[in-house]
Length: 130
Image (cartoon, rainbow, N blue to C red):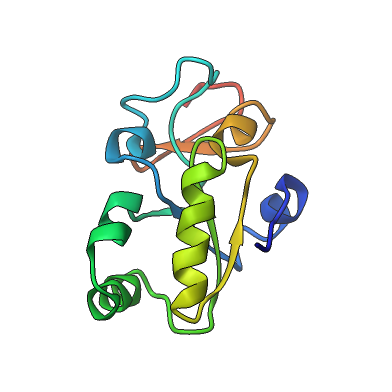
């Protein structure tokens, strides 16, 4: 499985499609793991819950990914809280013909870094203030 690290991901945020495969409340920051100093998502990330990826057939999932702006062969990064759910998502995306990579550090790592985050749709500074 192809991986991407925090340094490359943070440098390439503007050019990559990033998919957050966590539950909706984790994505919008209204809930999350208590071990994380911040809740929310990586700026610009789109949300596609892993459960949805698992229940949709291939044609429906391709359609859903198309609504997110992805075309077959596109480079895409998936993440979750600690890389397990996103690892499964990367396998699914790769099978469908996407150039998928797993950010295994995921939100657990990103929430600790001096990098921007979003809650809901609002940007949040690395210190946690808006």
